[in-house]
Image (cartoon, rainbow, N blue to C red; front, side):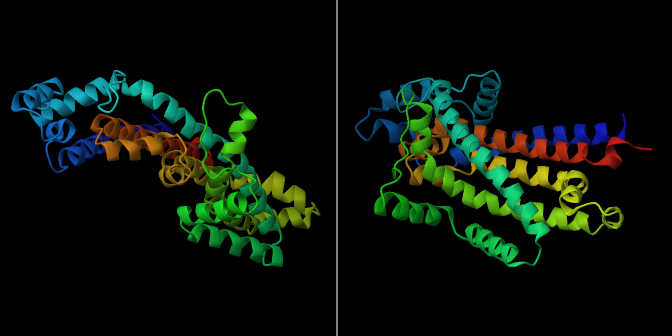
Length: 318
């Protein structure tokens, strides 16, 4: 086993271990909630017999470690349990909501990634110019502001003042693609303003770092024009950090949209998680939390593996 394969295998094992620890933390966190779940759901008028039957039905009378292994075992087999709020299978409830969150993240990524890389390239090419300073100040400001603040500013400007886009991003399966894109424009723009800053600044820094390399100086002495130097020589050698920050921002787009979904009442997994906490629907809370954690860990693993694969020293060991 060479060094690259060994490092990837270690990352995968560490990812699985991290997920197991997170699942345990989620279970312990839900167990630590104050009050009795059966009494909270059935109310104060429930008889002791009804409460005991409810606890037996939910297996709440079993020891915690037995319930943990039963939950994680069923989850690995695709059985997420049943929602306490409506009695529907959790997999059925989460499936459509998770698809909506992926749709919002996908549209945002299709817009934000090319814009961030192009802005980063232009800022590196015109380093220390008024354009570079303007882009840097704008992106730093966008990063510094909380997401909900950016969202409410956009709602005030584009929804309340000039009625261009709806302030509530409600979508359903009967809507056309254009109607959905129109409905999610404001949450998509909010997320884009947050992630473009990170990706643009990393692209700019990576390109500037490569431009100071000796082989770039040699290319300039040979009379190669600046555009070709950037695209043919600098960009391919700066891909590793750019890929890393792009994948990490994709992870944020999927799991960090809870606040944005709540502000725009978007029917995604983040909004479902908040609703489940309010209704004390603990099986949905556990399943949503573990899906968020699994997505984040998988995308971080992808970023690590792609960074290692784009490293020539690891791809071609001597």
